[in-house]
Image 1 (tube, rainbow over the protein chains, first blue to last red):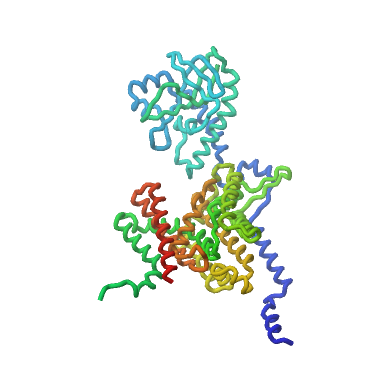
Image 2 (tube, helix red, strand yellow):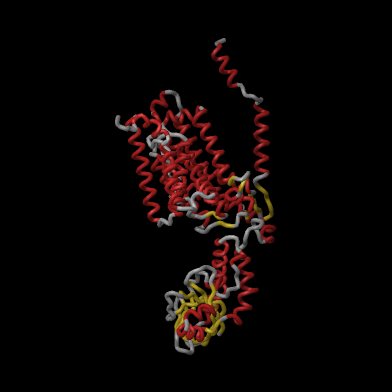
Length: 223
Length: 326
């Protein structure tokens, strides 16, 4: 027998018999798989309302905020738009301090406002309402985005959130609710000449204030 | 007798990264009193950990005379896969089944994803003889697109404390990411210095044809190296995702440049066959300290990029100069 070949054969001999090696590998794989996955009924998970225990659920939070806090409180909290416009023109800083809210620092601040007027025009993007003072404002029906709906009331406290992403997700969900629950009704009923009352969220820049052609995110509208 | 540095040249070349790091630390500490503080030290170490993970894999690739431009995108996809599975699991409405993932399962899935993408890089490079630059550039785009598809362009958040411990936790007074990167570096040093795979990697980078003639299965080694690079990019992705408690669709953008910079500054030759893992660690620390110093000194982010670019350029020029003198 060739001694070199013999040595190689010896060197390649596994430490454990192959079946035992496979059994160990299988057991290890099974152990990892058992500790990696779990299987549940999807209906149970959905019923529990959470797919990941402990995780923040923006849709649930937004729905609860919308129905339990914002809608009930809005009529009492909202500032009359006509009055606000006069205040902004006479003492801007005082008006911002008294009526606006914002979570972050900066010049962008939000107002929860209410008003009524006559629908004077409708388009794909908005419904134009002319206030009794003669000033036109636009109720957005297409581009509903940003943090106005979340921040305008000042009812959400930033300390409730672990991170800014959760906070931003709440804005996105609230805007989604507005798109689905408020806009369709507004678009269907708003015809030129009809009288309309509304509650909405308004974004204004304190440093560069423009009060012409205001666009309001509608929260509640009624004919 | 005139004073000359010539006798000290070998030592200067050998320790050039450490000397550069020392000068950098000295300069920043003189300009900012916040630099030499415990909190800032651990902050820098935590930030560096991600780049160390990616750069370790990149070093192996560069040692074979290759390059991997896809690590940033692979990092993002792996992090997103991990976060997505952890947060939402896999839902099979037709079968009314929900397959949930534990932290271990989601992390394994993320690392498997990175490894698979790395394997694909290696396979494409060896099977179709594509230049690594082109193949991994394609993967950069593919992985980024897949990340956008998986996340639908939105961050995946709320991953739970047991997962965020990986990126934010402490163990024995040292941040967990630092432990992880130390372990990865130790294993990589062992592999490159003490194993057959390590010798083959250097041999392929030195001369691919000579390695092939010597019986080295060049294609197999390259695929292994790119797979490791993908896996380590995925580990970097887990760290980033865990630290932020959020998988961002645009995570890891331009990380490949920081990684290549760390490798080059650490003395690894872009033409392969020469360099070390420990050199790369020094390079990553230099990049990390430079980033931190520029922030502490209130340098504009735009100027930061300019400065980093010049540092990389300088490192390559010094590397070329050393190669010529050798």
